Amino acid sequence: MSGSRTGRPPAQRSVRRPAPPGASRDNPMRRLRSRAKKALDRPLTAYYLILGGSLLITVLGLVMVYSASQITALQLSLPGSYFFRKQFLAAVLGGGLLLAASRMPVKLHRALAYPILAGAVFLMALVQVPGIGMAVNGNQNWIALGGSFQIQPSEFGKLALVLWGADLIARKQDKKLLTQWKHMLVPLVPVAFLLLGLIMIGGDMGTAIILTAILFGLLWLAGAPTRLFVGVLSVAATLGVILIKTSDNRMARLACIGATEPKEGVTDCWQAVHGIYALASGGLFGSGLGASVEKWGQLPEAHTDFIFAVTGEELGLAGTLSVLALFAALGYAGIRVAGRTEDPFVRYAAGGVTTWITAQAVINIGAVLGLLPIAGVPLPLFSYGGSALLPTMFAIGLLIAFARDEPGARAALALRQPRFGRKRAGASGFGREPRRWNTMRRRASVARSSGER
Image (tube, rainbow, N blue to C red; front, side, top):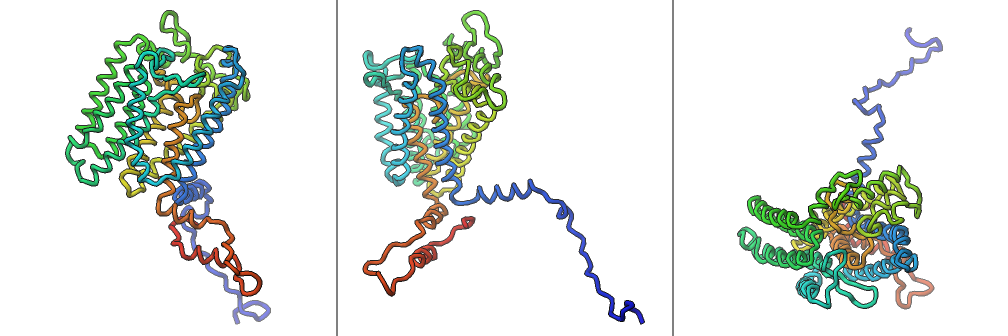
C-alpha cells in the first residue's frame, strides 16, 4: 500500500506555475511611470498645474526680487524694500486680474480682444510723442504715470496680439477661409508687423522677438503650410539680421555668447560674464538667501533681466532647477489645454499664451546661461517689473479659465463641492434627511469623468 507510514494518503502539492518574465523582479520605475501617467491623465491636472505653478513662480519671484534689489535700492538712496513693495503691489493687482480673467466666459474674452488691441496700439504710438514717452536703458518704450511709476505699453501688445489673433483665426476657421493663404496672412501679419514696427521704433528688439514668436505660434496652430511658414520666417529673419547689423549694441550682445571672461574694449561682456560667475559660485544649494556677492554692484540688472543668475547664486542648482521645473509644468499644462479643447478660440489663445511665456523664459534663461544674446526681456512672473507682470497674470487667468472649462474638469469640480448639503426650508426636528444624502444625490446626478476618482 503506497502512502505514508501513518496510513494517511500523501498530501498533494500544488504545481507552481512558471512566473512570467520580469514579474519576479520588482520594477519601481515602471510603477512610478504608471502612477505619473495616471496623475497626468486626470481632468484637473492642467488646472492645478497652471494655478499652482504660476503662484509658486510669483511668490518665489517676490522673494528673489526682495533679495536681489536691496543693494540697488540702497545705492539709489532708497529704502531696501523699495522695489519689493512696488512688485508686491503689482502682484496684488495682477492677482485681481488673474481672478477676473479666470471667471470670465469665453465670449467676454473674445469681446475684449479689439479694445485691448486698440488701446495697446494707441499707447505704443503715444510712447513716441516727445514729452510723453521716456527712454530707459536706451529704449524709448515707457510712459511716465507720475512719481516713480511707469508703464511699458509693448508688454500689453503681447496680450493684445494673442487675444485678437486667436479671435481672428477662430472666426476665419468657422467660415472655412483658412485654406486660402491670403486669409491666413491678412490681416494677422500686417497688424503684427504694425506692432513690431512701433516696438522697433523705440529700439526694444527683445520684446519684438517675443511678439514674433507669438505670431509664428498662431500661424503654426492655424495649420499654415510649410511654404507660407518659411516665407514669413524668411522675411522676419532678414529684417532681424538688418536690425542687428545696423546696431553696434546688438552686435556687441551677439559677440558675448559663450563669453567666460571680461574682454577689453567696447564689447566687454561684463553683464554676461558676471551672470556666469553668479551661477558658478552657487554650487548645489547656493550661498544662502540674501548672501549673493554679485548683486553688490558687479552684476547689472540683478533684480530684472538677470534675476535668474542671483537665484542660482543664492539657491544653487536646486533653486534654478526648481524654477525650470515650474516653467516646464506651466508649458505642459498650456499645451494640454490647447490640445484637448474643441473650441478654436480657446486652442489658439491657449497656444499663444503658452508660446509667449515659454519663449520669453527660454530667451531670458538662455541669455543668463550665455547660450543666447542678451535680449533685455524679463523672466515671466519672476523678474521685477509691474508692466510685465500685469498682462502676464491676466494671460495666466485665461489659461485657468480654459482649463476649468474642459468637460472633464467641469464635472470634477462639481464633484468637489462642500461635503454638507444645504438645509431644507422648514426641515427641523423629525423627518429631516441626513445632509450627506443631499450630497450623495448631487454627486450621483453628475456624470463621473474618466480618470477622476
